[in-house]
Every structure is written in structure tokens, then in C-alpha cells.
Image (spheres, rainbow, N blue to C red):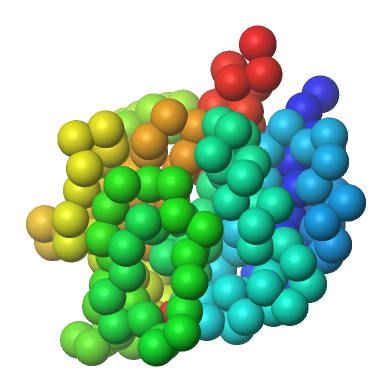
Length: 197
Ligand code: GLN
């Protein structure tokens, strides 16, 4: 089986580990650089991207994660994790840095300006049982304002892309780990398996 790390500095860590295990992966919590070694993939959970960024730089995780992304290691980012995978962000904290990797610009708290949190039934490309909608939970979520040509949109809501993929990098504006539906995590596990082959 593949081993997938969950970045465990802040945010919905446990929920992602549970969902990944349900999707058939072995999991490991990552708090220090050495814990990145030997992983087949990594999940960056939702939470607060400015905090995740700050703690990753303090713990020496920022550069090793950037390097692994550059080497093509699969990474899935949910909500704050999506922000951290974007090459460019809007409304970021003054000093906020991202890992980058996905050629896109996301705006932090974009939906939050209209409504703090909401749920939507999405059709997401690539999920098993595609006719069955995915109940997506958005909490002060980012949206995507610009996409590079290499980026594939897997789902949108109100005209805004909310699930995207570029190679082995997957990002969602929403929190699939709270829905009890593990198909987004299954999709990521498939990406990780395909990349390892
Ligand atoms: N608003 C948060 C941020 O900017 C993201 C919210 C979330 O992950 N649920 O990091």
C-alpha cells in the first residue's frame, strides 16, 4: 500500500488521516522534516493558511515540502491547503508564503465575504460513482481567480473552480474530510498510486 503523510502543524489533521485510511492508504503525521522521507504523497489540511505557513517555516518544513513538490511528489491540499499549493495568492497575510506548485491564483476567504460557510452538491470529475453528487462543505473558503493552461478543473460552483488538478497536485476549496464520503481521498490515493508506478 501507499504511505501518505498528513501535515500535522495545524488544522483538520485527524479527519484527513481517517479518510485516507478509509481510502486504503497507510498514513503518517508529519511534524518534522525527517518525517517526509519515504512518503508516496502528502496532504495539507484545511485550517488557517497563515498559521500553517508560519509553523512550517519555524519547523523547517517549508523548503523540504517545496523541494518535494518540485520533484513531482503528489500533494493534496484542502481549503487552507489549496491556498498553500497556489503559485500566487490574493488577500494573503503580508508575509505569507506558499509552497506553490499549481499554476493558479487563489483569493483567500473569497466566499467568506458573502457567506462564511455553506454546503453544495458537486459533480467532481474523476470520482467513482460519478452520478452521485459530492456534498462539499466550504468554511471561509478560497476560490480560484486565475488558472494556468496545465491546470484541469474538476468541479466548480457559481462559476468558480473549487477542485483542480495539475499533474500529481490536487486541491479543493472545500473540506471532503468532514463529509464521511471518502471519494476525494480515493481519487488522491489513485493519483499517488499512478505516480509511484
Ligand atoms: N480562511 C482560511 C485561510 O485563509 C482557510 C479556511 C479553511 O481552511 N477552512 O487559511
